[in-house]
Image (cartoon, rainbow, N blue to C red; front, side, top):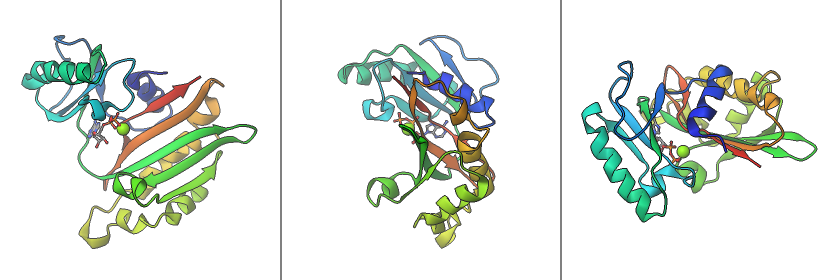
Length: 212
Ligand code: ADP
Ligand code: MG
């Protein structure tokens, strides 16, 4: 397993937008360049779904970090995990939450899944699949298969998502020269959940690399 920070620096090496962030030990001072509001995430080798164990706090100020860390240590301990450090990130402004996942399909390469995050994926299973390598027009076709595409396009006065930024993010992942094509065999699965797509950018705020 890669740490979230390692996964994100790999994404960013392939041109995928990620939040600025730093891994620190509890109590360690933050570098000056990190701007509030902050997001604080628990680092723990045994923790997969961080928020389920109280391991994510958004909208945190620098002054609050030690307090937040103390609360995280307790809630993680209650769920059987040890707090090993913190990933402190800039908070990306609200947008649509998109999920992109990729799984190695034996003999076929990578299966890529895209869906609208939150309730749309969990309840309505509104997802589309493709096989990497995907070019930009195939990626756009996948997005148009989603029933929720209208939501991304700003239906009912919502945010009009920067679709080209999302397409280019997915292309940097699953295109012919993308990250997937360069991964060592032992990486079996990647989850970018979520990607926050606003009217100006698409940012992968969570990254999970599953290694066998
Ligand atoms: P989990 O391990 O629980 O999936 P995430 O890293 O996905 O943890 O964080 C949980 C939620 O917090 C995300 O779905 C997103 O809504 C929000 N979030 C996480 N990181 C950021 C960030 N840098 N900026 C804004 N929101 C964030
Ligand atoms: Mg997540």
